[in-house]
Image 1 (cartoon, helix red, strand yellow):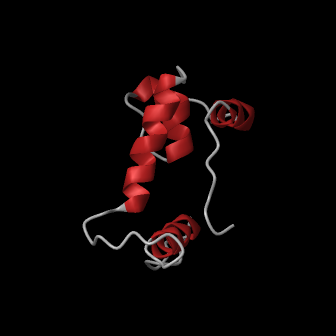
Image 2: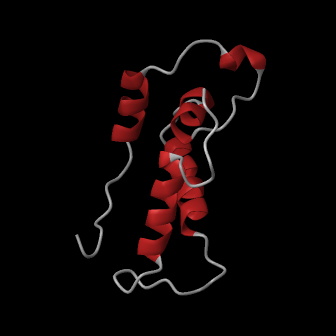
Length: 96
């Protein structure tokens, strides 16, 4: 794997874009203490736990490290992650 400069990483760029959108006039969250991307991760983990999705699948989706060595074996199955995400509620997004 080739190391990347800060900002060259797609998830990082996407998170930055989302943060700018949340703080834009379209959404309007202006409080500097609010960290929308961090809050969404917490919200996601709460919702997915409520649906009974195991922590291994949740960690694969969110990019968090697995809790123990045994959980690190095997690759995440796209179908398993898809099925987990499908259980979550949809949100209406203003301005779309």
